[in-house]
Image 1 (cartoon, rainbow, N blue to C red):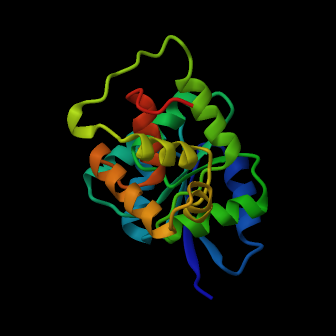
Image 2: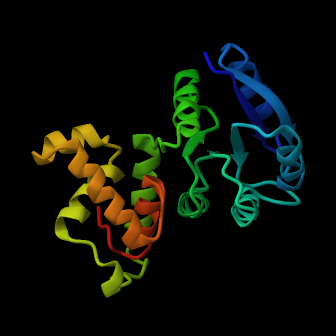
Length: 217
């Protein structure tokens, strides 16, 4: 069994301790460090080389989005899972567009926490149904402008249908069964979608498509 090193970044001591206690119930995860803000996190990342970062969005000194931007500028490949609350939907969408590998409510279950970390370690994005519902609800508000698709990034009707399924949290295998195509074909469509939108993950694809008005749920 692989041992995965976790860095927890949150300005609330109670949140850090709660996550640490949960993670320590599994022999698969080891909390190697804790940080109160993004600036501390950047230093610890260089020292500890964690496998996954659990990151709060709202923190003093340096918040989660700014930290993710700096990690991206540095070419840091360590996956980030955002810790969010019920009043941070717009920030959550920005984090999706930056490539967060998952989102967890701070009161998430032990099982959901472990699933998200395992998915992130393997380069996958796991978005729960409640998180996606919130993202879709925010972007469906009438005051959001609809940005026409640029010709170079125009998605076909079939690609949009597949992306809608992804936004609902469906896996490639389920999408393939629903559409009557092979799983390999679904993955090929997703690759094309990523290339057109200039992204490299499901979460980024959904966020960017919603932002540009390409995806309507």
